[in-house]
Image 1 (cartoon, rainbow, N blue to C red):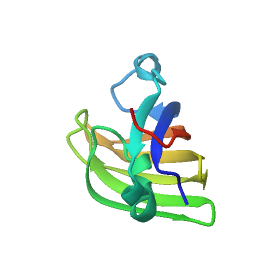
Image 2 (spheres, rainbow, N blue to C red; image 1 turned 135 degrees about the horizontal axis):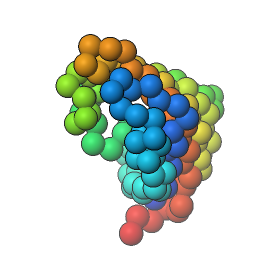
Image 3 (cartoon, rainbow, N blue to C red; image 1 turned 180 degrees about the horizontal axis):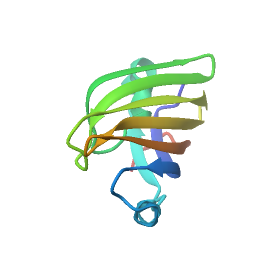
Image 4 (spheres, rainbow, N blue to C red; image 1 turned 60 degrees about the horizontal axis):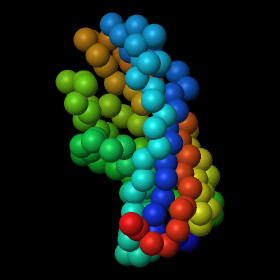
Length: 130
């Protein structure tokens, strides 16, 4: 079971092919700034996958399975930077106090296909959220 409490997360860009956006600009936007979230006891018991949700994304469907130390999931979400929804497939591993994932996001920009691959990790900081 994933621990309730305070978590820190970092997402790193592995690769990106976004039509009309130079790779240097994409790399410059890859800040890898850690973010923190609080997972409630109820979320940890019933819905621990909320740890994996991208901040700022509005999703019409999300399907994640966390079982036997493995993470598998997919989502269809809208992000501010794109006019059409993107589909993300996520795989990885988890324990009570951490996770590692790889996500492949696909969609279109200006009628051309885009693909972004990211690697994320999260670590439990403790039971109290302050």
